[in-house]
Length: 67
Image (cartoon, rainbow, N blue to C red; front, side, top):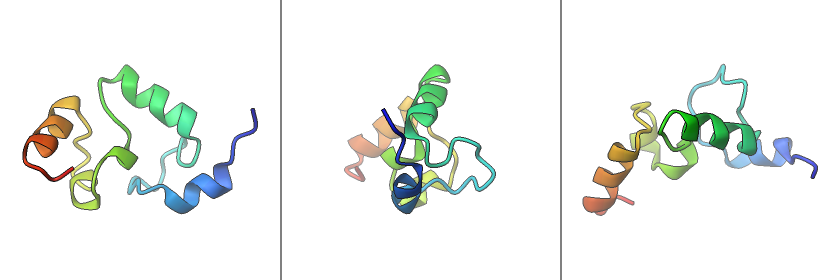
């Protein structure tokens, strides 16, 4: 399968500019799941900027109706 990195970058909301996985979704998801986290694209912009991408943070946002 061919990666659509250029197209992915258009919708990637990750604010960590030096991330080597930016736009390579399969690598990003694998990396974050290994760390018990979700990638930036699972979070609203204000929550993503906190860099807290934990399952627990995501769960709190869902419970608060922010996602």
